[in-house]
Image (cartoon, rainbow, N blue to C red; front, side, top):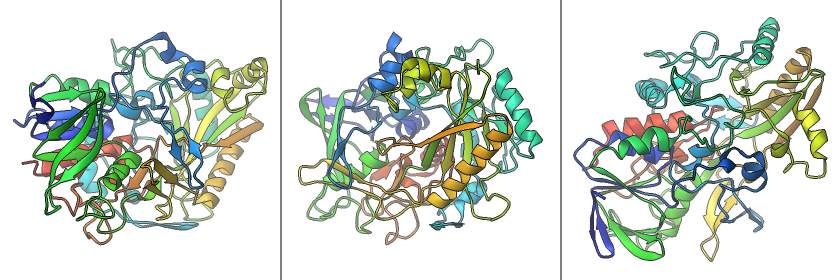
Length: 506
């Protein structure tokens, strides 16, 4: 460890709590700045084992999800879909790495409210999107999606090729006047790369480290620097402040059952939108009675996690595809032709398998599930989730996390599901089954600590430093004031690279 340890006190220059997309990318970007960087990770390394690729182990047994329980708005416990460990939730994400659309940075009217503007523009973030795409080895094409925002650099790698069934579907959809395009994917499918195009990518850990997750592309190369170290199995408990309340003086952690304190010059929370908000609430003091950095009263508010529906389009022919997640469409992103109100994005899911479906329909025989899954093409319909202040993270009297969330923008989302279903029926898939993601599916969580110029209406400034505490930054999806309808991972990474370059970490 490059940081200094003196009994129960550990000192460093920059302490980053969390090793996911935000924390890992920031550590990588700061690795050669001459400052000592300590990554504090609650969990350990996810093991590379046969169960990585077992649908039953991953989806039915929830082998890699936390056993921690949150409470919903009615006080009922549920088990959130979160992995605590090196790389965070990117260890099992689908490696979809699109940019937000240019319009997402401005005010957007939806059918049920307003998506607010960001304090930065797309152009402010654009060069860092390019850096993030190179860092995470993104494959894509800028030629087919009419909503593709302007780019100063090409995709680092060409798009991942469709298998024959998906290529045929893409041609059919194009014949309908739609604009299917290759998904922006972060997988190591270069010449000599580790990816074998298996059926266990989307939602699974990669046994071959061929997915562009935060461990593989950020944390591991960051640790090659003598200035970066990693402490695993170290759960951050609360943040201490000085008497003025303007500076953090230490992080109390539980390190393998031992209480310790990390002392740094600069502190970064990167534990996810839900957990970072909970940490600030848990660290309340006399100077910050409603939680750290909460003079606005907005800490924990505006939780978003997208309106997501899985759609199975079943046809008469068997679908032999193995690596299905290569196609997406944004034809309804900014409206459906009848209205300018945005509906959202449609993208392929990894191929659904019987073991993955068993949790949703436990009473249906495996043989029947295999027949349905063997004839389906599987989509994710994703619509924007608006930052409702009543959708929020709080703590109960015992300190447990309470997640209150009700869906919104549902009119537009239903229209998206209907439009996608109609397109698939025209493509020869007459049976459509759809299912909204359940309450505990929070892979796209964002908001809760929105950034902005005004301390009265935001928690963070445009470089993700808290308005109220001078040496505290937050570098995860908490900062996002709106969610758009694109996977958030690349945007988190791009903002981390921007913050690393522009912020003063002295």
